[in-house]
Length: 120
Image 1 (tube, rainbow, N blue to C red):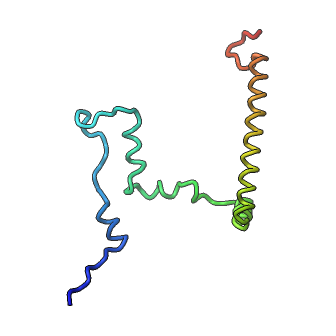
Image 2 (image 1 turned 30 degrees about the horizontal axis):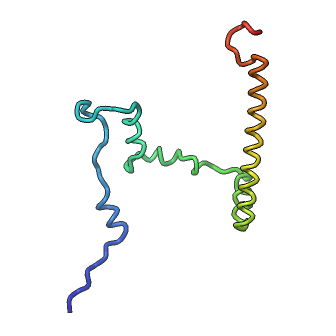
């Protein structure tokens, strides 16, 4: 009886897909920078980044007790309640946008956004 082919694990597959190729612009003739800032983007997304970058991620920051309480509250909500909370936040954001629009229009009419010392 023939042996069944072994199925590679996810870790083995990920190791075979890992590339150590550097995506920097060592040769401007071969790799011209068509869009400014693209050469800075490649090192940020590299899986071989240094450990300091991983430690400074925003989700790894120290949480205050108020933040933990909010996460626990949101985690205990049912799907319907969570959707209601999201709708409430969307409505609040919309209302704040309307209020900001009114204030910006008011500022425009009062000429408070004009640069310089000369105002009408």
